[in-house]
Image (tube, rainbow, N blue to C red; front, side, top):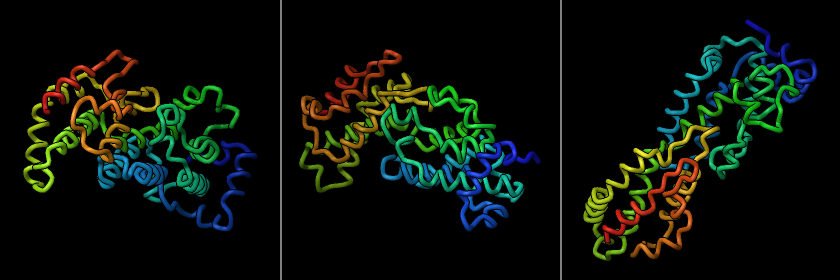
Length: 281
C-alpha cells in the first residue's frame, strides 16, 4: 500500500506529527473513527434542530453516501490502513470535529466556500503533494477534484433535506400557521391535524409545482440555491411565529417572500403560492 505520509512532504509530515501529541502511538496503531464517520458526526450535530430529518435518518443517509464515495473509510473500519494512514486519518478526524457549522448551515456564500480542514484533511488525509497545489484564490475550482472534498460534499448533500422534502416542509408550516388562525383548532389536536391535511390537499398544486420545478434542489458545492436558503429560514420563522391570519401578514416574514423565487433559473412561484394559500382562508 502506498505510504501517503511520505507523499505529503517533509514539512507537512513534521506538522502532522507535532499535532498528534502524546497519543501518537495510539494514532499510529488504529483509527478511532473513519473520515466518513467524523464528517457525519459533525454534520448531524450541526443540522440537528435545523432540519426536519431525524438524527437517525441524517446519520443513515450520510454514512451511506460517504462510504460510497470514499473506500478508505471501509479500510479504516477493517483495520487495513498502514500506520501513517492511521495517523493521517485520526488527525483529520480531530480537525473535522472542530469545523464550523457554517459550511453546512450558514448563508449561501458560507456554504459555497465550505471545505474540510486544508492541512489535516485535504493535504494530509487526501494525499495532496503540497499546500502549494491548493490555490485559495479560487478554492472551489482547486478543491473540486480532491477526494477529501468530494467526500465532504457527499456528507453535506446527504444530511441536508432534499428539495422535495423542503417543498413539503414549507407547505406544512404555512398550513399549520393558517389553521392556527381558527380558535376552534387550538384545543383539539385531532381536529387540527385533519384541518392541516385538508389544507395540504388544497395547496397540493403549489407543492407539486415546487417539486417539479426543482425550486429547492441543490447539489453542493456548485449549485447554490438562494430560494432554498430562504425556504429554510422561512420554515424556521414560521415555526416560531404567531399564526398567519391573512396573506397580508406574510409581509412580516421577509424570508418567506424569497422562498418562492430562484433568480438563477428564472423560477417564480410567488403568485401560485399566494393563490394556493390564500384559498385556504
